[in-house]
Amino acid sequence: MTLCDPALTLAVVVEALEGLYPPGTAMEWDRVGLVTGDLAQPVRLVHLAVDPTLAVVQEAIAAGADLLVTHHPLLLRGVTSVATTSAKGETVTRAILGGLAIYCAHTNADLAMPGVCDALAAACGLQAVGPLGEGPYAVGRVGDLPSPMSLRAFAQRLAGALPPTVGGIRVSGGPAEEVARVAVVGGSGDDRFEAVRAAGADVFVTADLRHHPVLEEREQTRGGRPFVVDAGHWASEFCWLASLERELARALAGAAHAPGSTRLDTFISILRTEPWTFVLGANAAGGMS
Image (cartoon, rainbow, N blue to C red; front, side, top):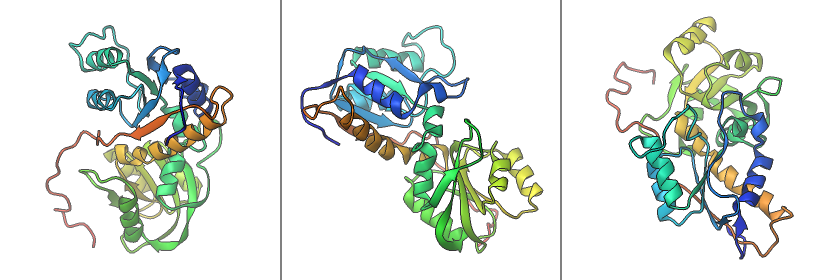
């Protein structure tokens, strides 16, 4: 995305981001917003990524970025030092020395419309998408496929829409079962099973699915609906970056502080920041065909 010169200030870009993903809507435990940077500094290139890892920060600095916007917070848990003796300390130090501002939009981006869950719903090909549940903290979306399809076909199509990962996609349910209504939660969602059932979903797409919550849910439904798809945490949220790019361009184009003579470029990180590197024994137990 490219608008035209001179540069915006960080303050203007942060204002646009907070209009899209209001910090006040983040969960109480979350840590969102500006981590490093001077609000008066110019911003010409914005780097977009899921995770603010050291490698991503180095990638952004090497690309000449002025701002890194990530989904996951850098300082979610308290720290007492940002010395380079720790990974987070080195990440903060490298960002500051490289003139790189860092901004994080986490659960506020999960709840936003459009946000992380809307992007995952789009990757699933859903129509008539609405909130999963009620209330201000109803994370997730639910919608319908254009036409029913088998669970296997749905999972295969989703795998093609998401970035490739080491672990791939895990599915619980009969491959030939027909599905039409789909609930989604980007990232960790194994606390939303009750809402998924209440929404009448045939299948639930999320990530970070733990053994006990999933086993209990499959027992509760006697192996029936909703079937469960674990799409991987990083992959299920990566698809939001393109939405973030579009929405930020739109917000800045309409901002009073961002006239048509303003230039801003964006770049989506090419680094895969999921922690896994290889898998052994997949389907060795003889999964259903």
